Structures are given as structure tokens and as C-alpha cells.
Length: 102
Image (cartoon, rainbow, N blue to C red; front, side, top):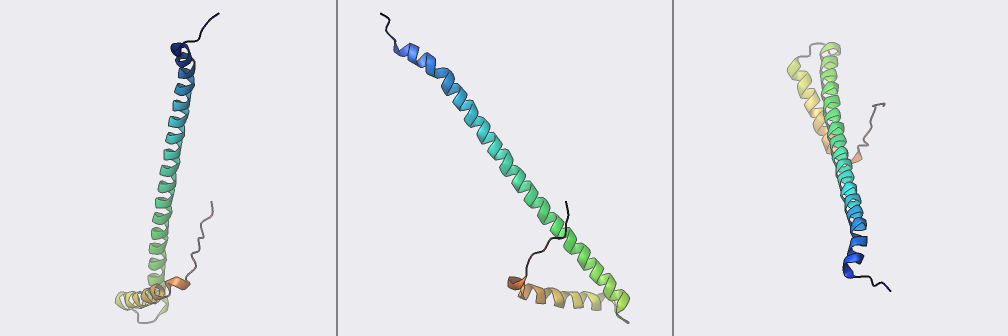
């Protein structure tokens, strides 16, 4: 008869533990990479929104200067500031819209 010692049991479970360790380590690394990707894509979306807002403000200023007779940069900027403060007051009623197509 043969008897199984504690060393034989440990030798059999050691590869399973090692494999489980590497699987958990790989899952942790994949989770961190996914979280980093989410963070980066969120930051890119915020940067695109800021850029689009700047472009819209520049277009509004150009339209004001072109289509309102006797307007100056200062008067158009003041007109835009009044509109922006009114928009901020109604921010709870605003619905975010995206016009980007991918």
C-alpha cells in the first residue's frame, strides 16, 4: 500500500494555485486597462465638447459682426455674454445633444 504524504498533496495543488494566480493577475490587468480606456475616452469627449463650444462661439461672433449693422466686437461679445448667462440659468432644462458621427 502506498500512502499519500502532505508533500504529495502540495505538489499536486501547486500548479493549480499558480495557474489561478496568473489568471487573477491577468484579469486585474485587463480591468485596469479597461478603466484607463474609459477614463481616456471620457477626457477626449470633454475636450471635443470644449472645442465645439469654442467653434460655436467664434461662429456666433462672426455672424453678429456680419449681420448686425454697426456692431463691434465689444457689442457682439456683450451680446454673447448675456446669452451665455441666460443659458446657464436654464441649465436644468437643457438636453445634451451630440452631432458627431463615427
